[in-house]
Length: 125
Image (cartoon, helix red, strand yellow):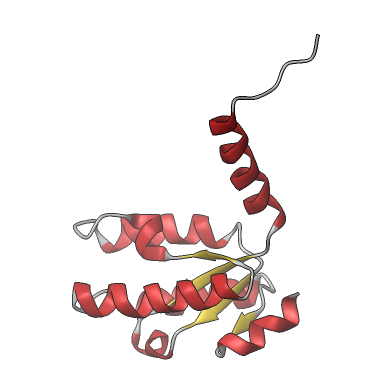
């Protein structure tokens, strides 16, 4: 006797498999000291652009999911997320961010490719 997964479980399973197969791109940029609306807009826009190219975008705002988190606690969560990514997309504001600086140094040290232009990500396909 063969059993089938309920449709609701099939959708969850497909999303899980999709995320395992698709390349993950971490978004690096300045969060601390940036207004919430501006921050959500710039990271959200980058996320949509990355996903439109067929990648899974790893948005640090979603990783931390807590505007009251300490800088250290937030960065630790972000570094863990970065370790599971295939590349990094660097927002222009990242140059003014100590946290993004840590992330970029770590990516460079671990040979995680970094890109400053969305269209450059197409090389990963």
